[in-house]
Length: 129
Image (cartoon, rainbow, N blue to C red; front, side, top):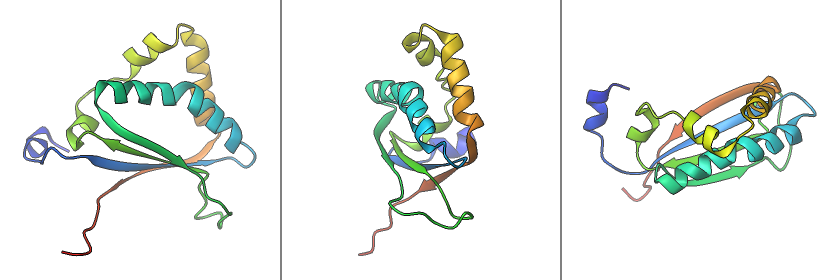
């Protein structure tokens, strides 16, 4: 999205659902690494005011392979502008994780066990309008 179009957007919360599909048998490993390495970076962004809320869910039952996902994180951002403002999480990860070699190795592993990952920006629909 261009900067010009972003400046005309209202300053309101912006939600995105992040879906993760892991290789069979690796869902627990993925979430362990997510909670250890990625979630603290996201929590720091809550403290900074960039993120308003984070939730994580998993399906109760299985689905067909085509529609299967293992984890869905929903992040409510302060506004759409913060999702494309050039911010880098690297400074946060350096602050939080002194052993950068282990951090990078574990983050690489987290993505190695993924079969798919997709992001779905969502909007609320007012059914009474």
